[in-house]
Length: 400
Image (tube, rainbow, N blue to C red):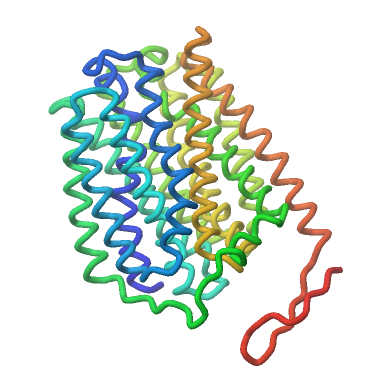
């Protein structure tokens, strides 16, 4: 695996810490900004919405720009967004800083994923994406619990300053270790890139990714209040449980990344099914501390076990447009990260309680499981055999 792929994973650590750390900071942010916890939870959705909109927009806007320069610019803007969040005097300013940071994060993910995929053979795509997703996993192991710890002892703003510092380290790594990626001899054509959206398998991949991610983060976004208000744990337990989720995520990423290249649909179906079962268990045993702590670890494992396969599947069905494929996957994950917390906040506002977020999440993953089965069935019915000219361009395609 090229060193540059690991550098991208390091940068994703900073991005992922910012994206997920609010799960452990909602109570202090709500108190400081004088808003309800569900409204504070909208800051998670704000970041996700920025990712959904920013990924395709920035992918298109930077399509013909040098990849290394684009990555440097985006990580710089992201770091400035963290500083703005740390200094935010009002909820509205904090909300805006989250959206700006999300735009930069989305663009970095889209371009970074395309760079990673371009540097490895087709048979190693899931492993390359697992390295990048590993940055998210480590963010959950170290960054998110550290953010919760800082929030409890030094105030929630200190967590934003810490991510800003991590962004500086990531910027140095990208600037010095990412090689200059030459642009293709033939300039990318937007119309050809957009043609991937005519494929129903692309839309199935979007739906499966969004629902699978949304189901898990519907519950995970409100894990801190569930731990303290329902399970009865002390607030000091929150960083530890978030760290357990992250350890599970790291293990799941490693296993999924190594297995998914050979058994992609097997990973998808088994991982989403496991998440569904674990969410149901979380809802049923939410008032018992031991099962909740154990499920937090296993839910991180199941969710991130499927992530490399979800990413690789999109690049397989949209390989003709790698930049937009990366952007579409980013948008799909964050459609889930938008809808999941929103649905969780809705059921909380309806007085169903924090445990109900797990039931709502399980409903989302059940639909994801069904759509993954439909995608597998269509994949089995249609086998594409392509022949290529000496230059490598596909000249014939038949379906059997």
